[in-house]
Amino acid sequence: MPAIDHQQKHFAPLMIRSGGGRIIYLSSVVGVQAGPGGALYGGSKAAVNILANVAHQELANDGIRTVALAPGRRVTVRGGSGTPPPGVPEQPA
Picture 1 (cartoon, one colour):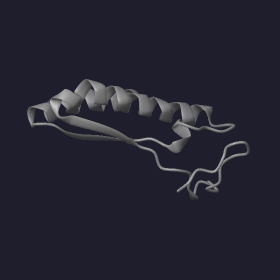
Picture 2 (cartoon, helix red, strand yellow):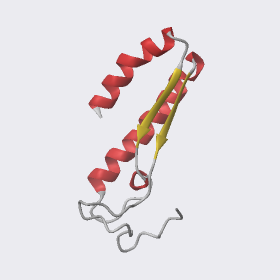
Picture 3 (spheres, rainbow, N blue to C red):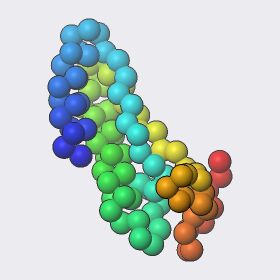
Picture 4 (cartoon, rainbow, N blue to C red):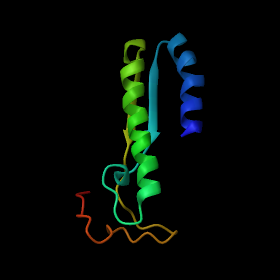
């Protein structure tokens, strides 16, 4: 989280001086709906969502729009199966 906050504080003034822009944060569906064993990852992605929301409130009047993109579960080379853990409902694509 410190890196995201640092980047925003560094680039927002430059963006304001140049007339605005977009800040895109990369989150995850797990930041809204974590399953067993996902506390740290889900918590960090939930924090990204909150940062994006607060940044939107703070920077919108300066012409800066923010959004947190939250991809769903996917099969990955790190072992992700693309299916939610037990007890977590399937999300539409």
